Length: 116
Length: 110
Picture (cartoon, one colour):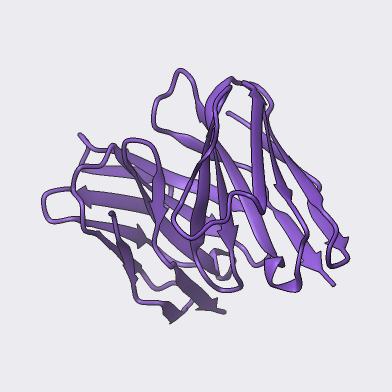
């Protein structure tokens, strides 16, 4: 089956620093990748949709200058949390859509970000 | 904008019981609906995916149904086991995104 990896799985950083999270599709090409955020005991909230080679589309209320998304290749998208604050602490999950399987998304294992 | 609702928010049952989780959605123009399992602090595990043209899908003790016209899906779990304890999420796929319900937290007691 299609596999999506995320790195790192856990990261702790200090307030004011930036953190980069990588999302990779390991055995398929993904023209579209999605970034989600999940607060404790809550559901996933779509943050942005990332299309290879173009700018990401952000959901309402998500700051594009704070959450920088880059999708430079068909297998890699990155989310950079800039000038992190404790309220950015969350579980971030990416998913990738297979170029040849239209609407099925495959999810990464998630990244736990803690900002101290 | 698609809204996905799951009822109940939490459910506790004794081992061996059959149970049904409910999912409803407001926009019937979906491509598919997917049920996921999420263990605490972990990512998502896909359980079943139902294409918009399908009525149900089965995998082992799990059966998911889809009624697009009424905007409803159910996940039936037969002979529940303590290992089934987790949060179950349903999600609809539209033209370019996926919308999740808030999940049902299931506890199966031995």
